[in-house]
Figure (cartoon, rainbow over the protein chains, first blue to last red):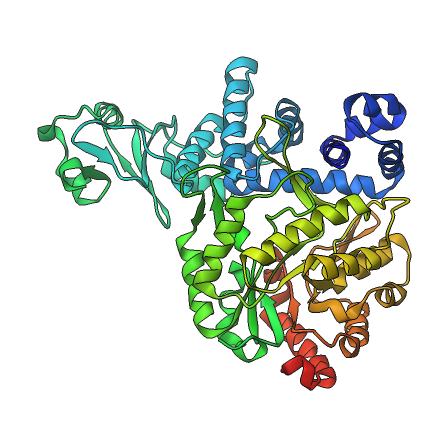
Length: 240
Length: 297
């Protein structure tokens, strides 16, 4: 148990400079939390005094943030001025992270949506870019589109996207978005879209009723626009 | 394909055009399968998913060059943990690609607490060079060797905090592990250089403390400095000291199979493919100078 406990303690330290500081100031806290031999306790306390521990903290934070920055780049751009504080709050709520990026990304996205609803977290286009990136990541990680028990279903690389502004123009604006400049003017979306992501993002406007029916799988066969089937956005159950 | 000896390149996606531009600089290709796989997590059906585009490229490369695998996911240093599903996936990949050897690191990066899913330490953490760690690692490397009839090497780690009062020196620990654990030693010379700079020791004296007859692969790379410490960032050309170390090690490592250059994809736009080719050509010149019949047998 001892080596395992030592490894858990070191990992807990590199994940939290605050914990490291607290253990260094009061070694009894370290002993209370982990089952360590005197030698293991002394090793950890000695490591805490070394300047390299700052590098460990930095590497932990960089490596934990990297998948989020890769898979939620637009969210990171619009949150930039307040990003570090938000990410640190996220790490406080979720002190451990899985090896699987998908899980971390879904958790961070849900955390942000909760902060928007509960704490009024705000940034230009924030809710829209989260929705856009949620859809892209859902497709990238091969999650199944909402179950559709009817005849028609969305192609696995297609999702319904609801944004307040035009998602095509939003995606284009995000490429060069700079939080220090005035937010670009983007016209309203005017309704939901089907988004497809295979090698590039494609967007197709649909009516609200059609989007809802596709998600719920209750679209009568005669109501399905043939062009959606022809473009491969919607699969016909009979053909699957 | 014949077991390679010579000069290898660690694959990343940004290098794709390199293989057509400078094919003559490469004798084998090393891949880190973990970065090309989506891992759905322990116990998940079809847990390891290959990204189609990346693996199509890997398959194309495998038709042209011998392949070797450098893992990060065994997390060999984690006490009380061994990922059987991960090993099964390595075995399956070996069936397809016929790796000539494979390797992982002398560190830990995953942890598990009772009743909870495994979690990521987000950096490779050092293990104490003690009997307890040694016995734990020996069991794992012997088990891996028993499951795959393929040479397995363990790589020396970079570290940013020293562990005091260890039972063994790094050289003693690695020698005992390789001897009793039935594995070879992957000597990362840039890691040696980084540790030597950060902890103010003589890298040649360190090399002399190792049993170089255990060395079967060498990694070389470049790095940079952050916060007053040298980093193992694979950011470009090797520092001169790494070349000096390579020149020193080569005539003393009779079982060496290959020298692999590592470069991070994020730095490639800055340094360019020509720079990668120059590093591989320089490695080859040293290899040609020192190689013996035992190396190329």
